[in-house]
Image (cartoon, rainbow, N blue to C red; front, top):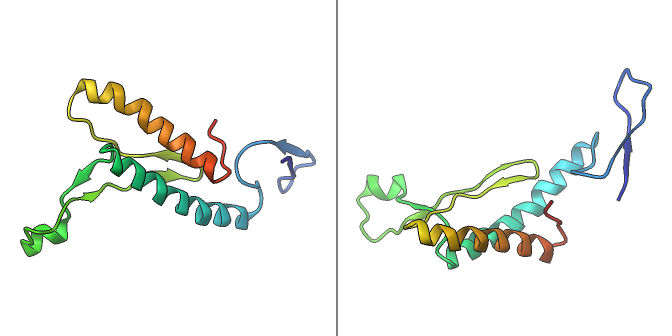
Length: 117
């Protein structure tokens, strides 16, 4: 998809092939809504493979609820840039886990029509 746009007070016409639709506020809103659903799948798959970082919840600690399990750390997302939190028990697990995490992110995005570049 090609996107052409102008910037106020400039006579130039800009062309881009990346990102959400520049100059369209609703493009970012729509992207974040749809990608939020994709993130839930990525988070679940990273958790299933034991790659998602886990931390005790503050509410569980404050209530001394010993039955409450750890919560996964939420990923950092700035527009279309994703940084998931990963946890590895040792160097070997990091060497095998990083490619697996990358595969999960790329494959899950592709299943939902997103291309990772």
